[in-house]
Image 1: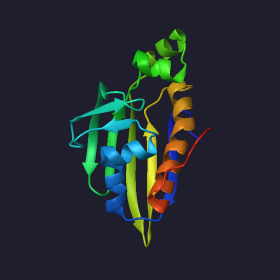
Image 2: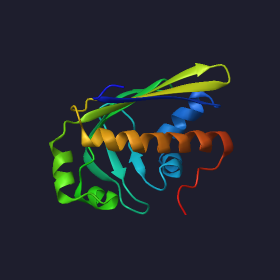
Image 3: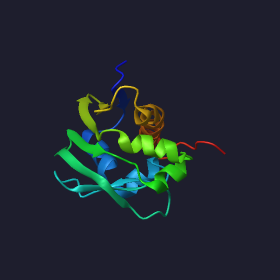
Image 4: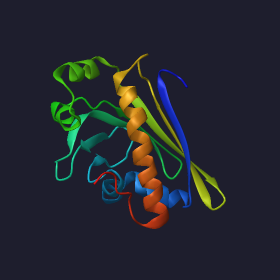
Length: 162
């Protein structure tokens, strides 16, 4: 495993068009991001705003869409270091300061049709070695992506926690 990137591949019983819609539609995103997540018009150069909690207004943290090729590839920058985000995750002021020092990373989603399923290949890279944000990403993306897969295949998101 690289110490500067996160890679993940999952196979979802769906079509590229339905998966693209789930990756870019605010209502769908909210369902598998537990009421939060990104929003954008998904045009290259457009901002990607984030809501980090249900009913929290989306905020611009300087992220932008890098690639948007429906229904094949989506990529955007990643830099979530707002104080409210740190509070939500229980980060100390020292942890938040550490995250702010890290370089802006990139996340990309490649959708590859394979018969009745789509391979979703996620690459999140551009991290510094021993990155604290990469540690968080390695815990967070599998939960989010599992929730996305379950939602698309069953119509209902997973229920984490109590």
